[in-house]
Image 1 (cartoon, helix red, strand yellow):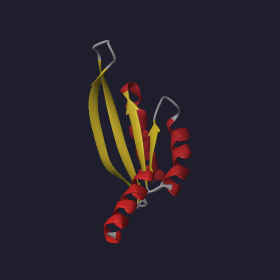
Image 2: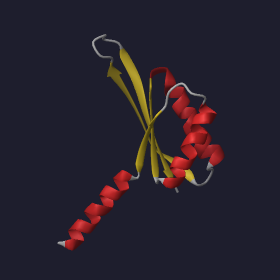
Image 3: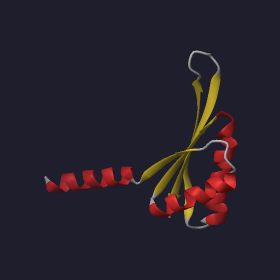
Image 4: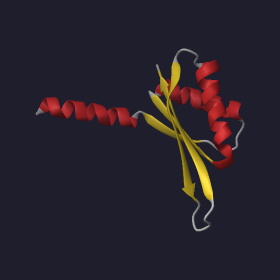
Length: 102
């Protein structure tokens, strides 16, 4: 029984290492600098953005993985989606970028 519980506890620990950051319209370099210490403390950071802030999320991910932590981080997964805005009928694009520390 203990062997089954230990992996379950490890999965919960891994999930708690995830930090979700919603990207808005702040300057991308400022966002990257703010996210850098979070990624230093956590194993995984999830960047989420929607609409016109999607390019900011992509730029932040590129700055972190290609400039700041080159060779020490990578983009694990990128998920694109489109959702209907509440009651309006317009569609809004969303992105989720998962960054991993190596």
